[in-house]
Length: 88
Image (cartoon, rainbow, N blue to C red; front, side, top):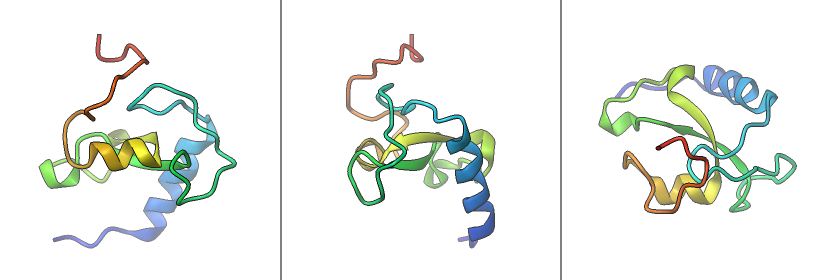
């Protein structure tokens, strides 16, 4: 297992949060004032999980609610209704 860089992780988090995107899993807005571990707080999700061969790159990361990310885990898609239309 390769150790991930905390500095890189923090930099990617700042870059993603800068535009305040909706949750890429459920499509709903994220309240960026909420602090982790609030279920609706902002976290960064690996779109393709590292466990499934995904890269630890900015291109493979997206904003998510803490609860949506926890539900998705290492699956390709979370077992919840996605409202963003990105899967259409």
